[in-house]
Length: 334
Image 1 (cartoon, rainbow, N blue to C red):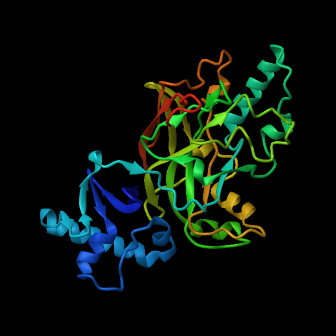
Image 2 (spheres, one colour):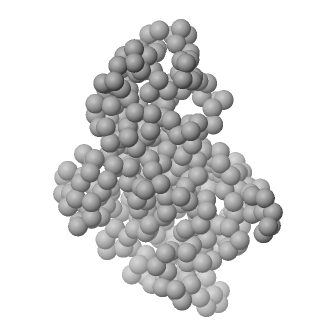
Image 3 (cartoon, rainbow, N blue to C red):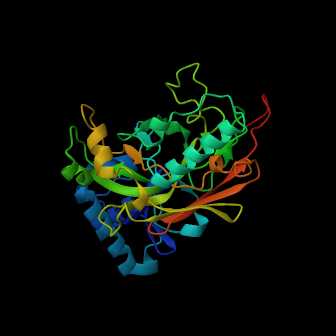
């Protein structure tokens, strides 16, 4: 099932060109009964487990069977036009842990090595990432704050701290069930579903070692990530380690890779990060990215600029975009 967030944060199933509000549909189906419903909130829905997903499928079947007779309820719309309904980032919660992988695609790591060498040869005196870090010996993750995430169509405000705003298309796994010290062979049982994710980076900040980079200054700022357009649940026939991931900037294809290039798969990532650390429903792991990022273009022409339009796609999930906009002058309304 494709599950989107809309409006005040309610969840809806994506059914063709329509959205079906799952909470309202199930309530109508059950005629208001207290038991067997579908939560309206995404995190509550994830926590409710397989029973809630089964109820959601039943609610969708009920709506499809009754057709146009079920367009709205007293509480609000039940069936909506997808194209006319703004969607929110399918982020389960501002309390979700967002753990993003670095250097986790072989092609991207090689391209980054080449870019580092070219910058050094051109006289760049900034500290360079050591070669040992280019192909990590274990999953190499960093934290993004959940409140930096924006959704499909939302503007990404160009940060004043950088002149080199970069993009990385990724697939993200959303954790569905709580676990700790999870063995690799059981790891994927903890997946609720998958979404498209972009990690935005301020590339001219990542070699500043004076503050030891504990907060990853170049990875955390307002609009430092986007995700969408919805979540595809793990019961669908989607192999997260064999999907195409693509980025377009102003209609130009920049990234065209595959998750088959991941160095560490999600099972290993979950195994590694769950040691001594409880994973909760709604936590998220982003895969890392393929080659084709702005940092790999020697002349810097691929870095984003205000006025650009960027789009991301994983065919089995969906496609969405963000406009890049200039930051308003200090003191002016946002």
